[in-house]
Image (cartoon, rainbow, N blue to C red; front, top):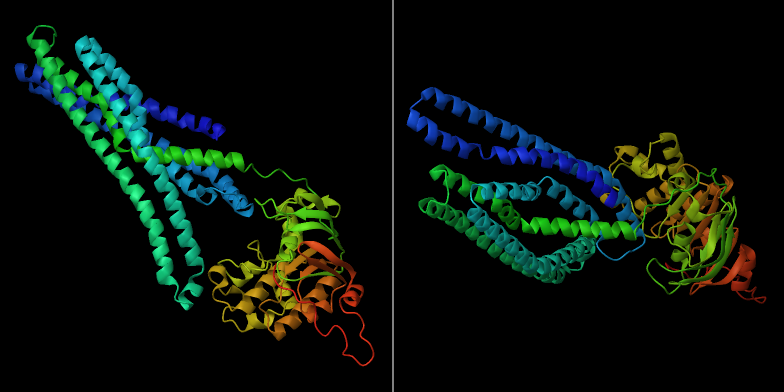
Length: 570
């Protein structure tokens, strides 16, 4: 953020340069009025009036042009801020969500918007005018030191009022911001589960819980608004009173013979006195925006320090698919208690490894560690001898297929989802669909592969969503495929298609790790890993593991292996 801050200083300096001339040009009406009274009225010279009028109109046009240019400079600065930080923050929010970091990571993009809006707001222009108030104060001192002292006292009073307002509004504004984030996060969570809520009539209760959070936010928001409003009123009253008192003081000094220049000097002093305090009053009236931008900057700066940029990964050749986990101990991001305790396994190209175990045994956690989503506390996961975290995700992605337990599709066409939203290779899209038996389903759709599936695939059934996600996992003939409960939503036909897909992946030389408990899947696996409470119970070739799980019965008893070990999601 410091480097970006220095970059933003360049357009700010340019805008400040224009602010100097804009503020000087704002004196044009006063000077015009003085010249009309002092020259035109007494000389009764129409030519002078026309020339002065033309000159002041030209100055007005110049003021508009300079103000427009200044606004364009700050608008471009805001755009540059968004372009510079936007991509970085999007990745940062993604990484923070992936690592489950606490805090306001999800609101980083909103904070960026606040900073962008602030840069092009009148609050920044008012802040630029504050240093120029010193110039006007010097001019007042040149007119009369007594008036200068009075204006300085007024400026100091405005500073004090601004400081008091900041102290009063800052705590409730911070509490309101935190409460707003909490309310929005809760609302988003409710909306994500709208179907369940509607089906079971949970909306009234959840609405009440949201309203309680919203009332908490509104209470602090109202308190901050009250403090800001009262501070703004006091500041404006002080400004008006100071302007009038300054004019009265100038008149008194003139009457006492302590100030030369007569009425013209009185008017100029009064106008300059208003220019001294006007930027401070404007800042006070927009203090909520200033505080909001400051808080957004602080949150972004903290977040950028907590989540460093992704390191540049080494360029590696395309993987062959040999995956090794060596004594892996791992926990979810942000947790300290391990859920995997010393897991060791190998997945070979052209083989299928099945991971089974009871619910909450760590199977899904293992899949996330193997794919490189979770870090390891102890041990390493290596793909072709290289730490999985040293691979560039962008380069490894096309060679890797992953089907999570909770299927996630994205708004777009069927083909775009299967092709992972990269360049759509229809030959590979159709090949992936055929492998998982999706082609027959697509043929029945009016738009075929160009069918829009809606947000999260809401236009598809559960089984169709599962097959689309499976087709996405096998798209492009990946070398390593990890499938977490791939048959969770499949019917008998889909289960058969899954078995055929596993055989096709084996034949293509991919290393496949599948988490499942159905017999149809176990028939095509080569190796098995049985875990319980995050610990390896059995690991080896399929027949050897099944022989231990289901010892051969004595003559006359039912045959073994009619069902597979029970297993659910981890």
